[in-house]
Length: 95
Image 1 (cartoon, rainbow, N blue to C red):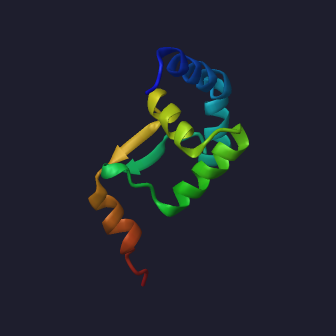
Image 2 (image 1 turned 90 degrees about the horizontal axis):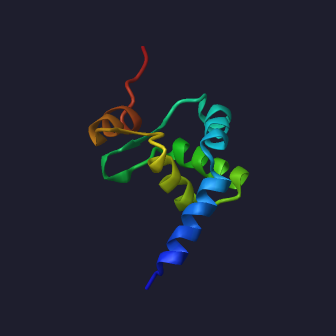
Image 3 (image 1 turned 180 degrees about the horizontal axis):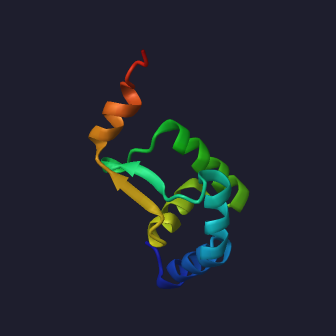
């Protein structure tokens, strides 16, 4: 069972290692300054997962800690899963 002290320590660590300033810089470098797009049910596109892993490596934090911090800072943008299915899995053929 988690203690309150452990929870607070984890939050402090996240705030120090992933401050809004550092998160903004990482988003600028890895995602052109745009929020990270995910789809309902917590689905990330494969290229987005690679960018997130690169961001977490650069910041020295775990992938899940990065996702949690992005969520806290409201830097995740949720879109319907149908958009992912329609555009990512079945791209329109160019003529």
